[in-house]
Amino acid sequence: MKVAFQGTKGSYSEEALYKYFGKDVEAIGIALSEDVCQALEDEDVACAILPIENSIVGNVDINMDLIFKHDFFAIGELYLEINHCLMANPGVETEKIKAVYSHPIALAQCHGFFKEKKLKPVAEFDTAGSAKIISDSKSETEACVGSRLCADYYGLNIIQEKIQDEADNYTRFLIFVKEKNIPTGIGKEKTSIAFTTKHHPGALLGCLQVFASYNINLTKLESRPIPHQPFKYIFYVDFMGALHDKKVQECLKELKRDANDIKILGSYPAGSF
Image (cartoon, helix red, strand yellow):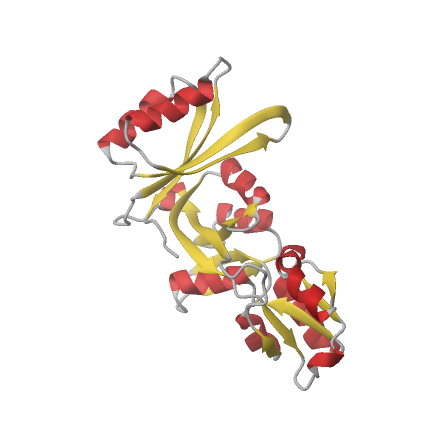
């Protein structure tokens, strides 16, 4: 089975893919999230895995917009613990390292380490791509930050693990299929939806009160601007409950009183970390 992920071989998304599916799948790395979605749309792959949010920096906005745009269905979620590793070419002496390459977010999460070690952060397109740059360059004064997979793929030496400023660093991923290919028999104790609110006072409050009245626990509430509709917003909600539950069905029906364009993004087994 082919599963698409965003990034180069060795990225955290590939690590998440193997943690969820195991090794008996064909991992297809694609540079841009938009192209990951297009590959799934065109059925070049059976599934796609995308990072949705990070416990430190919040939403991955571009991916939130993409899952609203496409008619995909989330069938699973995964929380991946992020282990930022400082890596260099074999034989490189630690004290000679002057600059460190990685994705801007990874660099920002390791700011304290770089400051302490007096290292210059250099932004690149992604973590795995940075590892390839260092490996290809054979540099003896530069390093990179990335996953353990990067060290395996690009022949790099891990100098130090978990160099991030916050020890508890997790990224949440969702696994998607096309709606017509939703498998049977998957557990569905958590659901993700998106909606806009009607234009009357208290519309959002009314939506939240509907969930409360049915004793449905919200685990996430986020808003995103709607592209091409200035100052209008989509609300993303995750809650505990399956689509086939009677109270969930009644809740969503009542939600239409204050909400427009309700879209079911998925219903899946809740992940843990």
